[in-house]
Image (tube, rainbow, N blue to C red; front, side, top):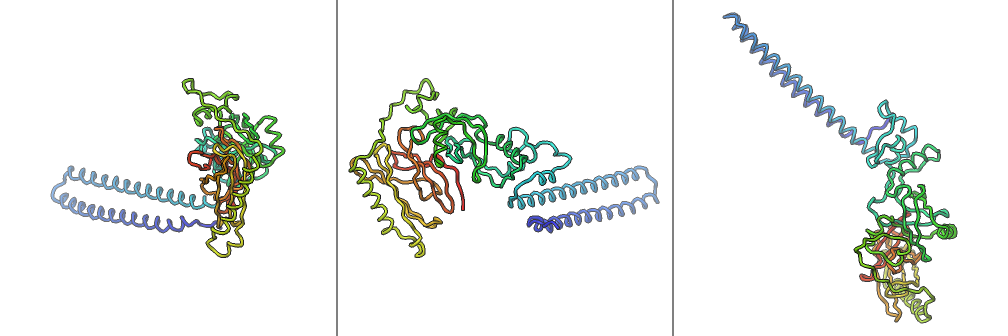
Length: 428
């Protein structure tokens, strides 16, 4: 026996009450009209007994016709009210049932169909019509905003993939469901098939790639990239190789001016734009011994500070909270060394993080992370992610029972690491 939703249980008595009230009003109107008809009939008999008049008969006939028309209008209003109430109840029930997500199959889609929707249907975000199964799957696909400029790229399964959204349903392994998924993603993806992207990754890799297909990876909707042989070799050898991607047709609008790193790849800029000033070259060679020693000392000082001065709110967290620290060389504009230390519990109930830059003289410059829900970061790579000549940070971010790959851009003016792009998120 099918279960009734909460919306139908609540709205059912209300609709019945409204119908009873409408019927009572109509019955009252009919009673009043019946009394008027009886009075008119008595008057007619008196008039006929005194003098037969055809004019009076015509008036009576007109009155009866008016009453019949009024009755028909009232019945039509009741029918409209009933239809509106039923439609509202069905809509509320559908919304209530839609909160419980279940994987659509070809059988369920066929059961929903009727004689009128055998063909394809148009999804609310699609430019063209989708097949019934693809339209059903499209309701479980969540894409990144279409106006997003930067995308997160990472090597997964020895391939370079772009994160473009998440999927909230487990796909069946049959070919029909797979084809429906590819159809829905191809129509709704913010990055269409064949889009040209400019990739920036570690080891001074700047590459141009194209989207050649779509796939699912660990609950994420990803686009497969056709990359150069150099980047393909790096992806096969390293499983967590991060990179950033930007569409080539929007690169000039996002960056404003072209940096020297872009000059060899044919980036288009307006003719009236002034030539950019070349950024000072940073040589990523071995750090001087005194600077490396200074970095280790600062790292240990941050770790001791987190243990001695930062206390968890509850006693049980003291033993669970662990300290992790790193010192990372790079070209950070005003310094050559980044030091990060954090203390956190495994489930991220408690997390605190400190980061500083160390310049060539050994001076410590505090920096902050502005990364929304991620409160702790484990550094992965340091590279120029946005092409401004200053190294940025690719890290594994941790939040409240969640995590993901995040790429932080260093803003030298405000001394902050700001989120440039993030993706491949996961939740516990």
